[in-house]
Length: 148
Image (cartoon, rainbow, N blue to C red; front, side, top):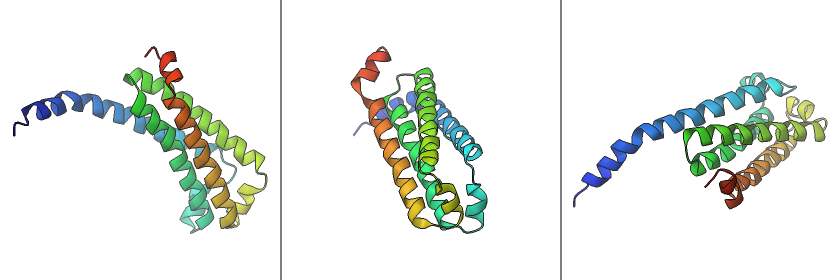
């Protein structure tokens, strides 16, 4: 069994993989930082204090931001394409998260008080929005807008 072609493909593609992974991780970390700054309650401090509802809510944010970004990474034609669509999806997701937090009034207080039911609900909304956004990025019409 000759694996030379497989090894050559890996070696030639590995630098692009590292660059795209780096861009995606950079966008991911930046969006998490922005979200933490946007929230009225200090989720990280609550998590450090052992608040399970804050951990669930923030876990929803982590997964909710990763899903559309992963879809962007899977469908990007280039690093620039990844950067543009990654920023677009993350901004939409951050705005949607903020809207959900505002729409579901009282949730930040309830999460700070340790209300796990409120946190699970908020986490579900955030992950649900992420799945919808991820599907939109994978839509063939979006590929047409990309020039594909």
